[in-house]
Image (cartoon, rainbow, N blue to C red; front, side, top):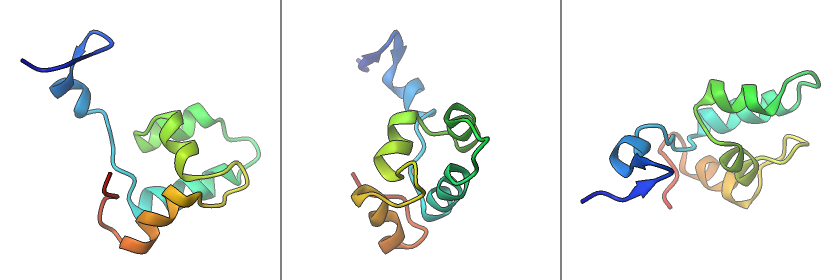
Length: 80
């Protein structure tokens, strides 16, 4: 039996969760630097949640401690 997250089976929900890679992090940092870009648009294009975005990147384009992990690992997805 799979867990239910907001009415969606965990297995189906997992398909929507993206890992933060170095490339995704760099794109997020660049997008956060654009004044007219909306956070919802960034998240939709990168396939990440708002929480994931802010966990890894500050509004000033800086990597947070969780954002440093993908940078240190190269292109591999961040381990949780």
